[in-house]
Amino acid sequence: MHNSPDRLPIQYPTPEPRRMKRQHTPRYYAHRVRESLTTRVSKLFCTIFLGLLLILGMVAFILWLSLRPHRPRFHIHAFTVPGLNQETGFENAVITFNATARNANHDIGIYYDSMDGSAYYKDQRIGSISGLLPPFYQGPKNTTIVAGSFTGATLTVNSQRWMEFINDRSRGTVVFRLEFSATIRFRIQSWDSKRHRMHANCDVDVGQDGLILPVSKDRRCPVYFT
Image (cartoon, rainbow, N blue to C red; front, side, top):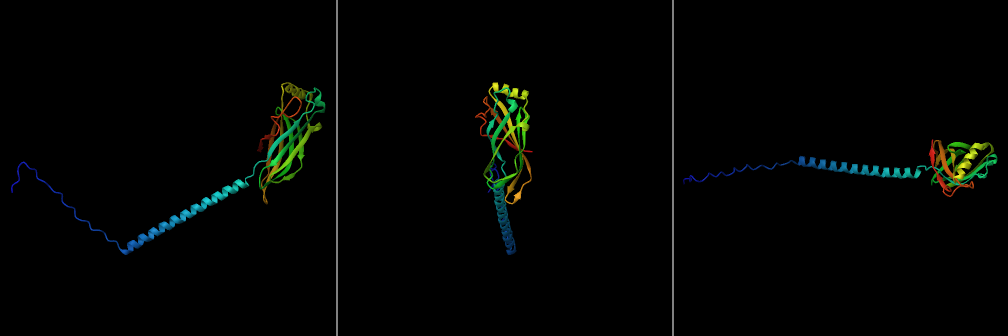
């Protein structure tokens, strides 16, 4: 049979030779099983190890939160400058105050080796009391009253300084600053921390009658360490 000159020859694809499926030996399958078991055991140990690390980290964080000491909290409740409306009041000048120091920790006590008090006016110290409170231990969730008076040798107010008080009084407010300084240690069960030098600064607004203004009464005083 002759091909027509108008027809193109048709080529059929040559079939590829059939690949033979590789046969693995029993030793090969045993090796694969051992590798699979090793991988699973390794993953299991890693999961357990990471889980233990997470648990220990959480426990350590909770212990740190519960044992982390909080600073003492100071509040000013009363501050009086009698005779502020008298030009000659400096001759018998007296400044009295009443504050509290609170240990807000639940399980941590505070040792106060000593406490001093100072009064400032325009950043100039006008009075100081050394040994305001003797050394004492303050238990957890406990409040200590800190009260005293600047008078006589503990108060350095002259006529010029008193007139500055009077001038501020005429404008309605005289601003003082009461500072408490103490060396403290934290007591955590049977362990004592190192000593810290603590300062509490209480800004006090005094009115024309020489009494603390409501805006300053029961005000919390910032506390910092040096």
